[in-house]
Length: 161
Length: 161
Image (spheres, rainbow over the protein chains, first blue to last red):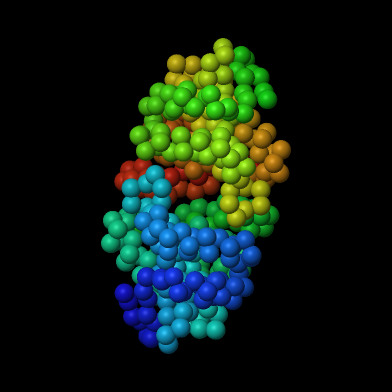
């Protein structure tokens, strides 16, 4: 689907499941409930790709090194939610996150997407991703103080396609 | 649960289904897909009240005149989504919307809610509700231009409890 400095991106397949869980854990950012949620979204995608969750896998030297999950936002015409982005900490700074983000934009455009919305956390673990979104032209569009828990705000970023 | 100038609020029951659909249609604000979504949320609530959607009905002179739907936000500690608020246009300006909003706050507090978030539309049909949220202390916390469709923005309002 796209190639950038040794990164290859393709639609996720059932065999990616274990490594998607492993990469999610390795980020050190997501708690157990969140890791479970990733599996729930992934299993829904594998069982019924039309349901509304879509997964892309990034491979580095043939091994899964990251993934993205996105899908159309219910009750909108052309808005997409960018649900999840994880990259393996051992292969970071290789452009994997950026390649995934660009692939998500490309896929959303193909599906008549007009905009992509990211709902994310203000805590330090999310900062590398947040910086990447801004670099790729996502605009800060909202902030909800203490949304996830006290001290953990929701940040909203929007990219018009 | 609460009484205000002839309005009584209580947890919705299966028998409210038809009138909830009727009130939704009567508002003239929601399209067919949105009306269907209300039924989906309501049926989920009736079948499994612990699932995460909670309905309150407002009665005026014994007849259903409005309802609210809210529930805990996934992956947060104490955030609540206020999904839906409809009041029958023939019994508006009777404090029904306000009584429903106050009951939602009360119910969210009982469930250790720290904040309530409303995601709504910028189009004129939603203006009476939006004015009510601001009157009740909801703070504008974000805006996503053209979110629902071109010309129809998402507005975010937050009330800390």
